[in-house]
Image (cartoon, rainbow, N blue to C red; front, side, top):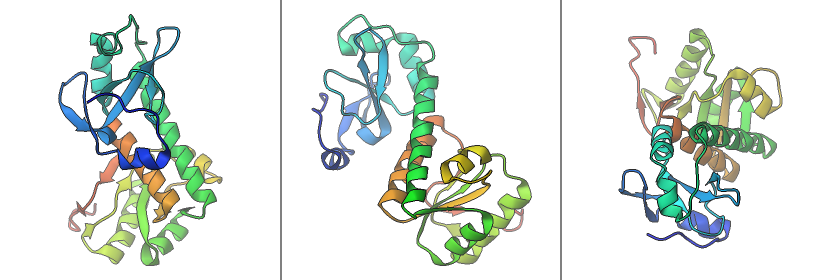
Amino acid sequence: MTDALPETDAGRRGRRGRLRMCAVTRLPRPEAELIRFVSAPDGDVVADLRATLPGRGVWVGLNRATVAEAVRKNVFARGLRRPVKPAAGLADRVGERLRQAALGRLGLARKAGAAVGGFGKVEAAVAGEAVAAVLIAADAAEDGRRKMMQALYRRFGEAVPIPIFRLFGSAELGLALGRANVIHAAVLQSPAGRSFLDAATRLQRYEGAGEMAVGELRLSRGNGE
């Protein structure tokens, strides 16, 4: 389970399932479930989110608590074989970078015509388009959330087979989609849409919260949720 050499985007996508050992748990996991860390020239530890930087690397589970534990134990010094000192706020820095990466890809999806915002447009997309994911702002009112779930029920029934993310606030969604505060958004099946879905899923895994559904979602009509 040695570090991979730098490779093209296509090659990297083909190796996402390659197993690496988490430096904290010592358990093998696919690369997609880990983050690679490398040392900077000044001895700092930085996250190599694209796993393309040269040199030795240390792999840590894609989870905020695991990264924080890696900092406390400084597993990086052993894995990198040099006296590095990770910043106390490394876990926060990684979370922010993952967040900005997902929002950036949402913006790219919009430019590619693969993302829409606003209840009416999202409702129409859910009714007749190949939707990859639905986003509901974390600060959305209960009534707005319920109406969107009703639209999803009409299309899919009680088992909704797409992820419903609540990772971002309305201001963040609005900035990414180039309009005022956005409560509802949808990403369509497309290369740009799948790129966003990958980034949002990594952020969700890292934070461990903010998503109403992964894969198949089953909700009760009786409780209004």
